[in-house]
Length: 291
Length: 279
Image (tube, rainbow over all chains, first blue to last red; front, side, top):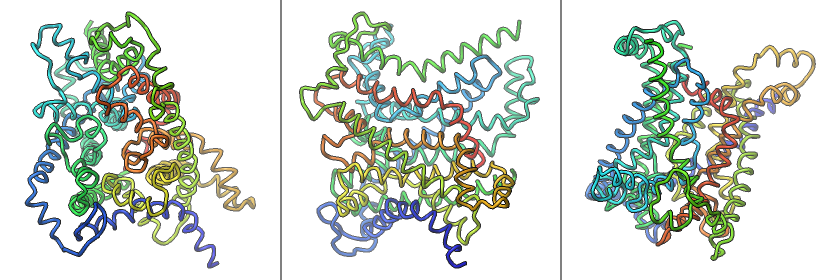
């Protein structure tokens, strides 16, 4: 009897052991490190309380990273929600080849981030990139645009690339949400475009609003934590123009060998995730009740 | 007439959307076959004037041994297939336990697991690389495989949980009454019914480990251990980027993903959104 009580715990042990080793242990280690002075990158020196956090407050790059993170996250969420909703509605129409179109738009999302970074760097290249060549040939610009190489453009360009990669999952979730709307409402043919818009504005969107909010919540955490695509396109530059908080965590930890401050930012990011996690669970539990 | 215009407009819009999402892939593919001179001239022709396989030869038979794309591909395949198999088995068992067993703390543990999935990985990498050094697993395939299994399992467990919930309990109860034990029920009834979930979870596990750059970046430093993403990033960091070779490698990194995904897409989408939208 005793033994059978233990069985479920034993069965889930392998996964929880790995989660402990690869996730929980590092989180704890980061928390501890954030209260210590560090040497040679990782070695803990002496306990300094909140000193790492106070240092951050005086560190201009930290504030710039926060500003960049806010622009990055909001810009991406707005762009991705816009694309998801408009393309989601478009691809949910009763048309031939619907499944094919829905699958095809997902390809950027399953593509390795490195490949997307290379493809876009190749297309946005100032001298050999097709986009600059076309704009020059059409006479729309006189000299090539430095999409990734100029501080003013870099943030916008990477937001675009990132949204190109991540909007597909939003589209997918919007289509799934649209499928919960009664078919009679969705398929009712309207007289013209403005009547269609009114139908969405006053009938369909209100029905979907909680699901759209949930998609927004998911998009928040995916975009807020994004590192790879920024690192592979601009490395946080030019200057520090695209250095968001995750990029700063990496740069402090692996390039500037300042583990203490890297850990302090990590701790703040972990807090954001914790708050997010609580919101997420609160929402998903409410969702289950209505099922 | 009105309806005809509407349909036409829909197709035009779909064409524009597909162009935005897919043209970059077409451009990558045809550019990988263009000769060096055309690439450097910024040739904009949509069908290559001259075709060459030089980029592919350069990738697989490089002048410098460290840039051998074949080796990167081999490493990636070994790591991704191992991670996939090692993820699926415990995820399936845990998914089943979370669906069918009642035990103290199950809800809490389930949330802890989902939280591990939502957690920003960037926060983990520095202590993780220290840990892997202690364990003597830094710069090894095993270290990377363990990491992938740990970060991919929570989502796969969740996929299995939402799938098992849809299997009628009566089916399993009948078998239990007939004298099967839990293990037999799992092996003879649950697993055969779970083919769609197994395929979905395997695809997810493979795609995620295949595309990972961050963990590989902090854990692998020898050229002969590098995976495809690391190898491609290395090509890209060169002073003079050899676009032919780089694009050829990129095509090879995307191709298997698309080939595996497309036939399974319908299944995958169902499993993926079935629960996701409900939370």
